Length: 315
Image (cartoon, rainbow, N blue to C red; front, side, top):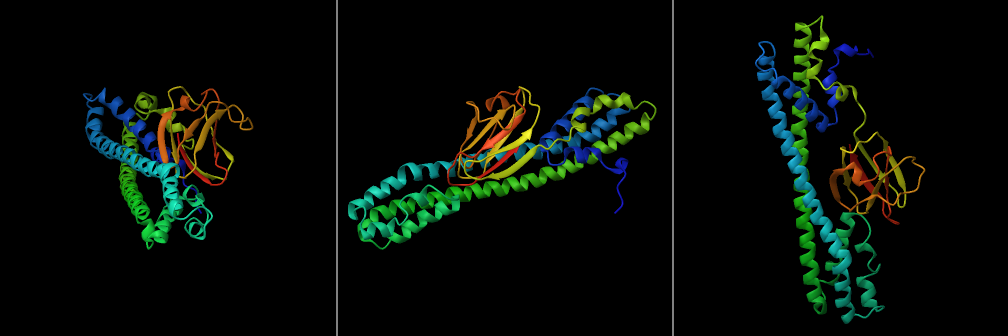
């Protein structure tokens, strides 16, 4: 297979691949630099032409960020219901059922063969199924009609919250596809304009260096990390030089808590300062909220003793 010559590769496309944030920073830099010279007979037409594509990217990018915020809110609604289930509802249902069928009785054992365990552990879908199963088990028992009504109503709440969440996720995926299409257009436009400048100033390439964020273009470090963690296990996410102004997005796609922290050496124990991310939630925060930014190693830990964790980090 023939190897493509470097000069036939769109460096803007490769530099922005897998990072809409990086695309935003590069296009914003280029646009603002052009805006300063928009009255120039050479740069003016380039600015006018590029502005259309820049604004189109900003439109879908901001819409995408807004949709991600809605998705996070919907996720938290599901998380809140799961917390209510494990901390309040299951105890209430147990108390109401045990009045009719005492603990240890055959009827009680039939209703709660594994006690409360299925309502606290497992995936979100498995916990939903446990609530549904409880409703089915007691539905035909007149003595437990009041309990069944409460269980059924709560299960309906869970289903509604989950449906809303999934709709938001689908909308976010669509938004992501729109941003990706605009990212590619921006990459082509940047490459085209770079070519125009090379053609105009072939003997003085440094004259238009001010229009491009060179460090961002040279920097191709991975920015999106994902993975799974077994119970009580830790994972070194990345080795990165952080600054006080850096932000980081943390995503928890599982039903366990996640601890994120910074250390100078990955073999060090978890420090006193760490960030506790709740199940089924995400947040964008300053890196300083996780730990001391002078430490380069970002680590994630699963504190759960039973369940596997699922995490994602975006720098």
